[in-house]
Amino acid sequence: MSAKSNRQRRKRKEGSRKANDRILIIAQGSVTEIEYFNELKSLYRLPGIQIINESHSPENIVKKSKNAISREEFDKVYFVVDVDASSKNQLEQGFAQARKLSTRNRTCQFIVSTECFEVWLLAHHSKLTHVYTRATLSAKANTLGLLENKKHLAESFPFHNLDQAMKNVKMHGPNEIGSKNSTAIPHLLKAIGVMKDL
Image 1: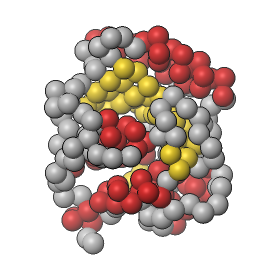
Image 2 (image 1 turned 135 degrees about the vertical axis):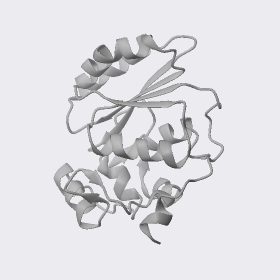
Image 3 (image 1 turned 180 degrees about the vertical axis):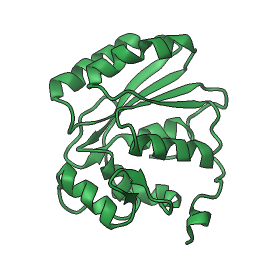
């Protein structure tokens, strides 16, 4: 499939997102995650989603984001982080702070990838059959042409493989630290209306 057809506009699947939901995605990663979610926002025409970067530890991401969250009335807030850059204690502190920031009208959750976001990217290509380190996951993503220059999404990234990626990846829930080479990203994609079933 050509790069152009990979990035053609997609019809949004019926996920759990209400048409008027205001969603904020706060990514710990400043390049790959931002590019990935911005491209999904464009491909699936998701105007109610805002994506920002906060490159801090999990407990500090919540603190640093409070102003952005309270300025606008977001229905859902997702903190997208990697385990590799954080201790279990930092993640648990972040989970607790996200719960405190949640209200009757707003849900705040952490979406964790163990070891890193590349676990999800690689699932668009194939199933991981071994446990890999962050360095190996990143190298594999580059070798397979999913990333360019170590961090940027390839122009030909296979967004059309979302359903296959979900089958290929080990999944855990939001606000959880999963087993090695697992992620909660599919839960976020369902929440924003890109995926229907988990």
